[in-house]
Image (cartoon, rainbow, N blue to C red):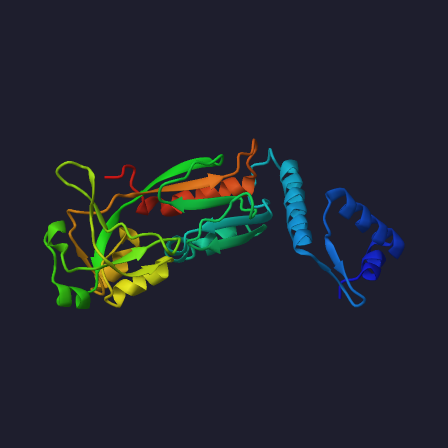
Length: 290
């Protein structure tokens, strides 16, 4: 059990010295870092954030000592990363054991959600974005593009028919994906093969979802047409569980970007992971959107 007494014993100092040091630290940072009760001492939310940042700084100092050494196996420290759910599940997780085996000193915290996290506010070292970027002070490293396709289940197409053109979509429905529920569905988006311009065919949405797992599951259940990155649909297309439709009228490709904080010197563990991630994604990426 955590206590000032045990901390004092491990440090070989009086308990009063530990208590005073904590009080002085809390006064200096302007936040309560420890919650004290008669039975135990535990970190407050501010204390947890402060501890994590201190651990990062200590890891950075260790990295500084090894800055000019070529040996990368000695890299260590906490690494906090956020990836889109489907990318983490399908592309990164299968290869992650190799990365962690090569760098056992890295403690990886991997967020996998389709919510757009606050990189700075939530303490992430880097995040992967799929889709257009909002204006940001973050550093952006463009990796390429995910090309998209139009998919539906055999059961859905048996009920509604296989459209030969966007104009033939009357009577069809889409499943709308939106990271923010309540957004108005745009409809069926496609690049006009003749002009290269973006077109939108208005279609009602049978369902609105906010994560990629639900999006794919809705399509498999026959609830409507989805427009998603082709790499994630390939196994389902190969097995016949989904069918690609209107291949000449694909939606616009999605830019894939790594974002990280504007640091003058990027920590080696962050650079190593970003380079590894770019290599993992490379077979699924296109250099141009078309």
